[in-house]
Length: 474
Ligand code: AMP
Ligand code: MG
Figure 1: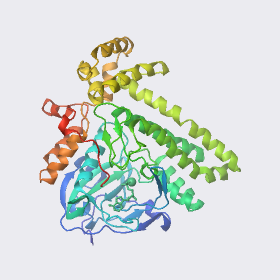
Figure 2: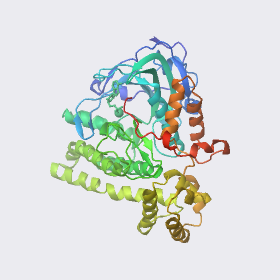
Figure 3: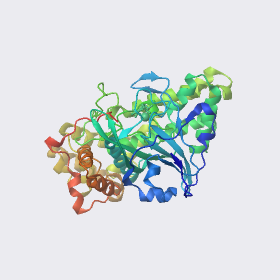
Figure 4: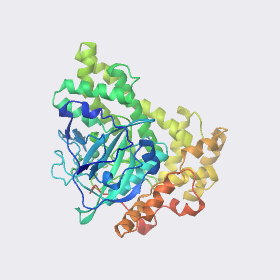
């Protein structure tokens, strides 16, 4: 590994690296044999000032000027079970770029072993790297807070999973990589000073308006309520909503065995390791609530210091936590209201949305195509029980807002990253052809406007194309 001789245009200011040493381990990425660019996000690179970076930087072989690489420590509840020490086992944070849009972490995911790797190899293979690139950039384009993808490189090394695959590294850009699990780590250590420092760091970075510990907690809850409602509106199933995979900033993070629903079922679950359906589509709001309760426990000592009594601290935090379901419901009404062209969906409109969803669930109708098809009259083509749909449609037409077309145009993407397409892109890349991956990134960057030539991408999987599960073998 060499320090870059080229002066990078990225303005680094590494605030996390200035926290006490127990927050991280300074460590450089492990060198790889043959970096090769697969996908590069030109627009994001320009925003960050990273346009001049060589593939060797994205592979971890060259450290750009001003970077201060480190692996972050965190803990987490994984499928409900407590893991006291996780941390970046295969990711290295290069540093924080200062841009006109704010401060962004630049992290290499798959950069080699760290002190938090446990039995892992610290590496990623091209499949999950492409999946995260495609899905996260779609989320951004669809208006969902998310970490972003700057580059995907092949490393030239093989990575052993079910078999040997080409190794790859994703350069991920995020408002920060601080998780619910970061707070949990220090809480479990009974390191109150660290919890306080972390809360101050999070406030300064993400919620500068938040007043006191309670205000901070409220702001984090509001961001999560908004985020989960937006996921639901796209039929997105995250797949691994462990507390270490919930970003404090309110961005979607850690795209593992995630998927978008094709034929609607509220019970949809895709992860091969989620046998109980803990992280099924319809579970996501209550899982978020549960995760936020864990965060609330971390805030108790901070609150106690402000209020003087633990009982009062718990009461105050619980009161905020208990408001989460209503907060989420309000966000959900807004998201799904817009999807059917209602400007200010109220309590009375919930039934109208729920009735459509129930019809869709009964038929396993295509989630994306039905909602998008409400705009151009093709929705009924995706339903089996067309009579029931027509009856619903009459109620809907009597209720929708005057500007319904404009509302819906921004709420219902024409195209989503369908699992079978992503799998086809991965297969093609394994055979040496990255063109489908590139096409998906391009088409999904404007998901509300689909060119005629790309209409094949709206098709749900044919029977022999269905991918039932995405695997955690990341
Ligand atoms: P994830 O399920 O991707 O959120 O990862 C959970 C934990 O396992 C995190 O601490 C990761 O850093 C770690 N991890 C996942 N894959 C690997 C790997 N291949 N090598 C080392 N650590 C890993
Ligand atoms: Mg994770």
